[in-house]
Length: 345
Image 1 (spheres, one colour):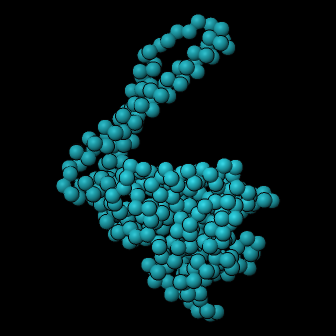
Image 2 (cartoon, one colour):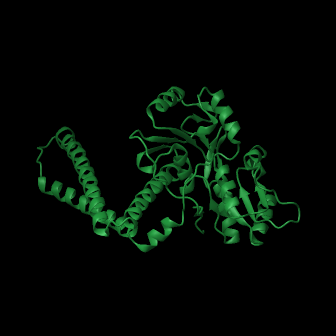
Image 3 (cartoon, helix red, strand yellow):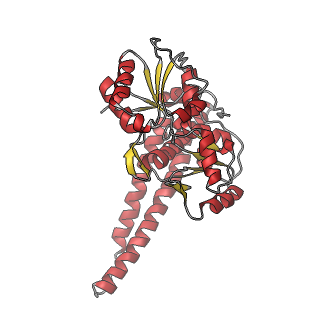
């Protein structure tokens, strides 16, 4: 199976903006604020309190079965105090990507409700050449005929733009296949990678943070999907660090100076993590030996010190590899491709 390409439109980059020390917060919606159409107990009040404490909030969702307005209305109906500006969906990224690629005619394989969010795109007329197939949640509309039609368009040269790439999701009647499963089938059959514009795409997180005027280094992502939410946020944070290193390099900092600053940080992180892990492990071992096994407890500091040292060295090695890439010409070229970030509003 070919792996999907996460889109990074050329005009995207991280924008260096003045921010407070208060972190920006990105929240997934389905699974975090509500589950199966029912609000998570305490979520509405928690969102209100979080908004007062955070440096800004964006509700980021991969939902493609509802329009942005419908998502807002659902949240308001569930008792959440939310503004339309706080809701970010993949549809806006799809519109921007198609504009950037100058796609003149697209085939929209999305639910009827989502057409209003994609109104800026020109739907292909019957018999007209299709530049891109925009794939979203069709629900029961994912039939063999629809998929075969999309497959033929891809074989004729159309680009596959997947609004998201989740494998499955949970409905009231149980788990069901999501857009990613159908996108993977089309990718496999056509030998073409999809351009994914929803989470975990870097551009999706970049747009959310640009709206808030925040950087990834002071942002928090709360989600229930390890790949789309957690994995995407980690990747965005890593890109932020690489970008910072490249900027410092371009401004005249030596690779050695950058390496020393980052390696000190990685060394401290590795040492503190190892000390915490060793402390918890020692405590657990003490209770296991004295309470359950009923034998004498003997503390051996040498293995503990070896563990801390090896963990610190491993963290330093991984950090050094990242810093080495950040100072390379390839990283500088990659960062320079993005241009300046703008929000989607």
